[in-house]
Structure formats: C-alpha cells, structure tokens
Image (cartoon, rainbow, N blue to C red; front, side, top):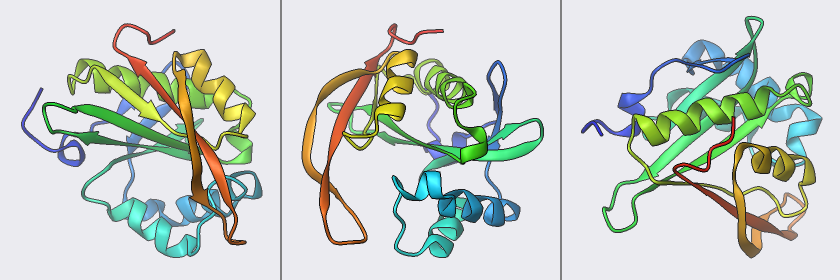
Length: 178
C-alpha cells in the first residue's frame, strides 16, 4: 500500500461498462442533479444539496469518483479508509440517478472500486451501510459479494425528524464476485 491518503491516491478506474474518474469542480451541477433526483433523494436526504454537491467535488479526505456511462455522469461513488492498523478497512457509498439505475452500472462501479481498494490500497475488508429497507441497493450489494452483518438501529435521520435503521454489510478480500 502507498503512503498517500486515499484522496491523493485516487485514479481513474474502468469497469466493464462504466468509467470512473475523480470528481472535479466542473461536476458540481451533475452531482447536484444526482442528489436532487427523486429516486436518490428518498435515500440520500440532503439538508442542503447544493452544499453537499460542493463538498463532494472539493473533498480532500474521501476518494470520490464520477460514474460515467456513455460519456454522461450518472452517479458517484466514494470511498474512505480507516488507517489505524488494528482496525484497518475501507468503506464505500454509491449514488446513481434514476437514469443509471437497473442497468448494472452500480454493480460494475462497485466491483471496480472494491478491486482497487483490495488490490491497490491493500484492504482486507470493505463496508457499506444502506438503509435497512432499501431492498434494491441491498440486492445489488449482495450480487457484488457484500454480506449482511447486522442492523444499525435508528441509524440515519430523515428530514421529517424520523429515524430509520441501517444495514451494515461487509465484504472480505476474496469474496468479490464478478
């Protein structure tokens, strides 16, 4: 594993059908459109989507890639890593706008980033934490090799003040499915 933090180490990645490239300030409008897409907003409830879009394109701690299909940005995927040797692992979040859903693009992007995290960054475990009632996302993550670990009770707040459970999922090196 290199010494650079995850943001400094980010590089373009290719899946079978998607191209992943580091997000740039020019992607702010695309990221904002993704965050405010109704199929995304129900899961990724941003209190200030414009500020979140700005943060995504300027974040210096996370690795954030634009997911491109046929030259269009259809989503983004981000990774973070815990570097403490006793707890070392990576975590992922992914967002696809409605136009990118149900086409295998998310699974392809996940495989590319997981492969990079395992092979290039040297991680042995990756986590992801969808809403416990987001069946579509959970099925997609399981197809890639993530396994259900447990329920995170009242894990995430909603704009209406309610709380919902999250599902902790993880994948170990060697469990990635093609």
